Length: 296
Ligand SMILES: [Zn+2]
Image (cartoon, rainbow, N blue to C red; front, side, top):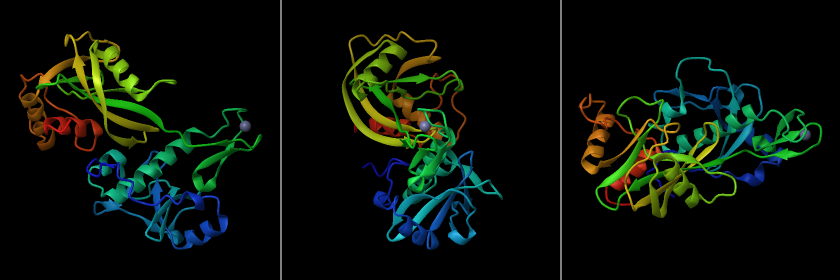
């Protein structure tokens, strides 16, 4: 476990064996803390902390059992935002502690899945929530369906020396770069996905592909699996213009400077090619910082 990577600690007991125990769940609900999550995946905060409720003050709706913290049960319930202080996981995750982040990531992941899986992929009939929010069951054929987690790889590609390969997506501002990333395809290993995505996006070949850390990113259902990979052969970039607007090799000084501009919200040097990188919440940034610190 990588405790210093935001959103990755998951510091509660999911107690999965309780999900089918209706008697236990009913009792647990009475003494539970309830995490509200809106259909847009916003969560309520108060004074910068996650605002949970007692069961008596929770809205009606399916009760999703998140797990236990010591002996205290936590549930998630969908609710419309009713006052100020509702924020996105992106906004809240950066300042949440590990427990808050773990609860919110889980609640948002379930909310996103339920929201998108209202009908049976086999027969098209409606499905309903079962197993305390951890399955959906078809009302026509009884088939059970489980929450999705779609693996994506994200990789810090370096040249074995002082430079790393970063790219800029079309939707990002000028000067803002990040590590390369992409979805794992059916029938593909994680390592093969790293090598394929790097080659497709930049024409660069890599080897020495090593796992570093992972981070759940429930928009809607990604698990970001982070790697380091080393250039082999020619560093010349052959860009895929559909996937990327720009890519380049940047040295440690350039990247460290862009990290400072990003963190301190300072105006960057307008002449610099690299002016901003991913914020600290992200696994992309974690990989960059590990590399800058000489740990990859
Ligand atoms: Zn069905």
